[in-house]
Image 1 (cartoon, rainbow, N blue to C red):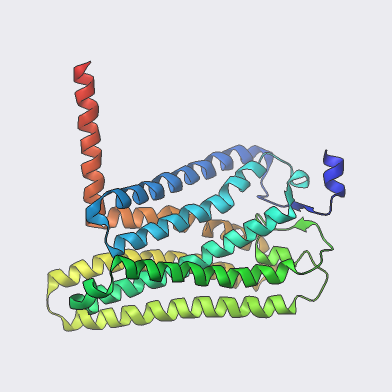
Image 2 (image 1 turned 45 degrees about the vertical axis):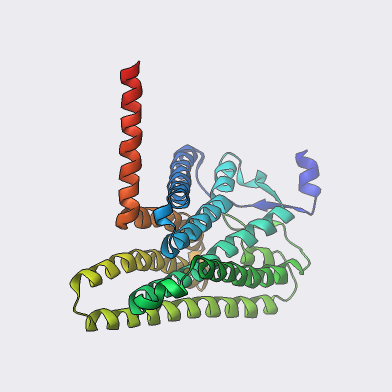
Length: 320
């Protein structure tokens, strides 16, 4: 019962989305449509790449990992936001264990976005700067090892991040954020959170620094190679695949950086909360579009599948 829930120290109150009752239905429909689009587009891209043998190449297998991460990230945040919209803020209960899990998944998704995109940058570097050795180095097994390392590094970094917050005793029950994240977990404590803040800063600097540094150096090297090479068609193909990766990286990096900057301004907490939701909505919605529509091989397969299905549907209608 609600009386028992309010007395239970393991049950927290989650702020969720602060919207008026009149606008909650409109926001629910809007978020639901975005979530459906994210799931259909990313899972569609995933199915297309895994079923089409011609697309089972390193670059496309890396796209699969981005699609998995995007569906995982959106599912971590959006369904919970949707369900909370129909409850008043005072009745948005969440178990502490579920809050920890959501915080872990949110940070794991953000960290894996960086580590997977770093490997995608390395893949583009090898394809453009070492084309003769590319097939020998970037085998499917090598891609598997790199992807496993990307997920493992992200997992380890976030286990420590969230683990430092879980060890603290709790004296508060209100999570003043649309969803549970690491900061909202350690803010439940009245103990010193210096260790959390120091590790959190180190985690952010290492993740963003290594990500931005490696991607910037990779593209600098690619730019030098393209400028020294006079083959326009080769350069055009290189820029097309690099453009997709770079667009995805810029969207993800800017979305994440806005949250970090807004953290420094407590008076802009509502803007930070909105930015943190958009981080789990905008990149997953954009990535499938960027990869699915900008890359010719994927675009052609979508057209072929669509025309094949349309012809099949027409033939069934004529048979009737």
